[in-house]
Length: 114
Length: 113
Image (cartoon, rainbow over all chains, first blue to last red):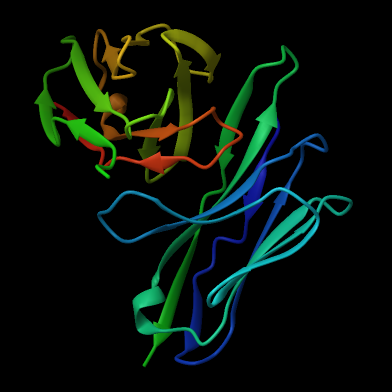
């Protein structure tokens, strides 16, 4: 079974620090990678998408992709208490029959302390 | 621009009954995917519809089915409900499918008693 793994955490950082979230995946053919944020009791919200090796920056968020090592990470700079949420890594997986699906990691709960 | 709309928001059903959930995607999006979220299993892919056709399917039993209409609205049906079907059901819409950015609705919280 092709998988997406995230450290379950939780991760706690002080306000203003950098939070680093990591994700590994097993399908070498994966082409699309996403980070979602989910507040308690809410639905997932798309933060970043990344398709090519390297870094992609959007405001305080940077996604990093390394296909050779099969990992994708999310850095949150200048963390704010409002960033406290569960962060979900999602990777597009292709099954043996050619079907595709978006597979989510179990999520990492981040707490930013004022 | 309106987001993804799911109805109803909450449902309570009895074991053995069936249920239908509805999802209206973002205008212009042709792909609708359905997910089940539980505390133990996390977010799991059910199936994806694109232009009224089921294009991809996850590893759920045949009790879970869906369809998509010509206006891209989608419905998901669960027959012969089991206690383990209690979950948050989420739909997500995107332009082209699971390889492109997808946006979630608020979800339907289903409780089976």
